[in-house]
Length: 357
Ligand code: AFP
Image (cartoon, rainbow, N blue to C red; front, side):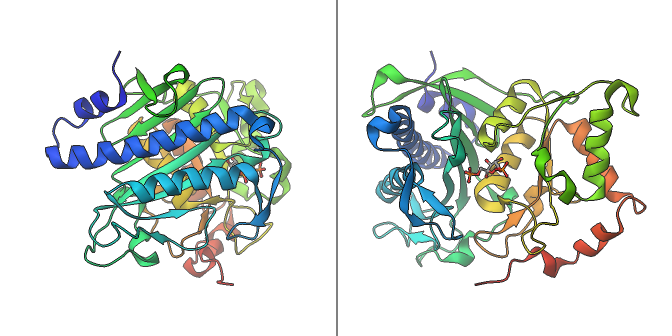
């Protein structure tokens, strides 16, 4: 059985040994924090982890107790890690610079500590998403500007899925690995066993995931794509499709890693100044890197998600990712000038930026 450290050494065999040590120790710190989050989540009510906390996050959304506990697990692990200069969390308004390592450490970490919070009380799968970026301007503690890097600068990215099994899916830009947590190993030295290497997302699929209750707000290219899928054998695609929606992106992406599919949280017209529901840095960019490393594709409709430069820390973007053939098709629908005149207007960059409070 190959464990996390050993698997990382083999995966990064072409890297300088110092880089391997830095990345491997940072990933182990994150993995340990996630084992702890998984343990708290699995105890549910017994760990007083259900229900609302008495607080709101940076976006003004009510926080769940587990959101807060998960954020504490991640931030305290990162504060102890000597390679991490600072971190940004979906749950925190501002970036955090490490007191001890902020000036010299080489890495920044961005994370969503608890993805799919609406699933907690229903005991449905939830997850953690993380992204590791270079700390480029060493000598000073990192601020917001240091985190504004496009997704293709990520050094590593991953998610942990707290489902029937606890899985960590990870890329260090050398393919995608899946680790399963051996829950009997305890929390002091959790054992993550490599259970799949070089994951590939099938190019073709007959499965899509979208919150169909938002249909009336979608733009024409998405209306067309979903209508064609739903028409099945009788429509232009001449084949039947299946639909799934878990409301946890981690679970959704993991299903795509397992058997292919398409995940869409597109731009919609509910709030024109919030182009999409998902966050670029905490959700879209790390998932895009994983999907691309597994042979899939991730776009906002017209551009690759990994090419988008964040304007603000909590920027939201449309997310369309998964099996490559389907994403190519959806991009071609967005490019068709007859499909959607309003889409061309939306492409104005200023509309991508959320007004600051
Ligand atoms: P929460 O963590 O706030 O529950 O949001 C989860 C999520 O960001 C993503 O994981 C889901 O795909 C999406 O939101 C679900 O959104 P809807 O509730 O609008 O379906």
